[in-house]
Length: 403
Image (cartoon, rainbow, N blue to C red; front, side, top):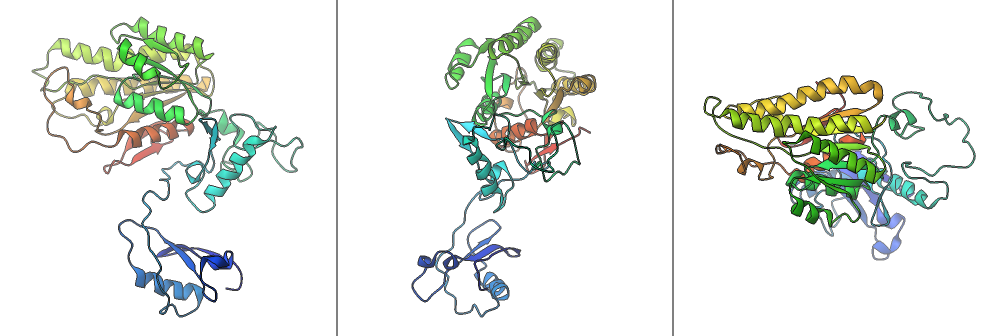
């Protein structure tokens, strides 16, 4: 190779380049230095296989090459869980722009592409909610806003005007999180805030709610009681008034009980129905009256909504009932441009199962990482998604259409 070149996708080599081709000081005079990335996990290794592949790529004998160092970089690339948008809106956090391959594609190109969009943030024609600066003059051949010319649109970089109308842009979005004092709701609130959202927090315990709100100065708070549907509706209207509207409402609270169906009392079944089904529905019923096109309602129903387990029949029934309610509302709200997201993760490490209102939790496998799930929830909110579930290995899976 006679000019600076980056070689990509040549297994086992992910990419390789001669650093001294552009930075001669990276090696002593008269020598060359090459950098090679290998995709995989575990400790550095496989040097011989890499060396043989480099010999083929560079067309030279590499047996005399000296390995200077090898490093394992954990979490080097973002997980691109489908459907993955080719580009995303600019996130603003702590007064600065957030960019990187996690905001585009997990590739060598993704990082600088995201950086370029973030650099455009300083343009006087940039406005929140847009991933690119706007030019004063119309680019020849660029579609006019509101038109569509294919689902895979390279001109729009995956950010087509039609898609904007049916997705929530978290940068600047007004989001009510009901259950923000819990482990899962707290983690989701933090994730949304990092992505630039303006949260409103709702919870049952006034003291815990006040403590949680300290992390989000100026965020409105509302106390609700799951046994009082009117208090759920008041929380929605309070948040909408304080924020000047709502772009999303998410419920992340619930109650669990264990025991055989014949042994669980009616009062426990009624409690589970009130907390897990009727209270979330009350939040969403009120939200549907104040939200407009492009907004979203989302609820954590859990894997039990589709795969009920023995020993927790009433809990499973309450979650399945909420999931069925969401399915029907999705069909009703589609014409209004309001999306419905059903979140069905598996068992998570939140301590939820250790706080049942009745019975004792059976032995369970290690719970999944709640932070990984809430990050996927935020991704799903920004995508045109209807369902989020987790694979057997705990990997979040986002589906555009619920099945």
